[in-house]
Image 1: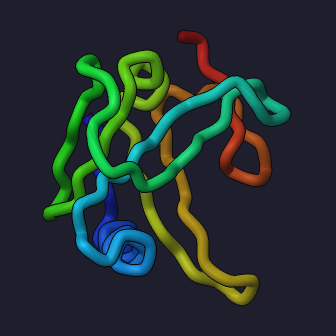
Image 2: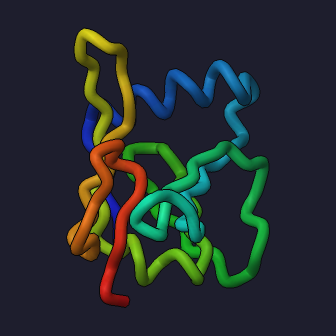
Length: 111
């Protein structure tokens, strides 16, 4: 299971309206081999569930899709959104990450 903070939900909904004005899109979160720590998050809006093994989570009307290969890496993830002087960005709080990069998007696990 994953969670989205209230600010992340607001930002996802804002971006969803911008990129998919009809509202029929899902937020896909995946983990791919990349980054300085070996794994990196990827987020994108997709029009539908793409694989029968995709897992769906609903957080206050935001539909989040995670492929089965990524689920072990991000189970328990909390997605947050914060703004600072340099702008805003999503922050990933992953209980499975044993190391993270300073960018916050690359991580390593023992899975």
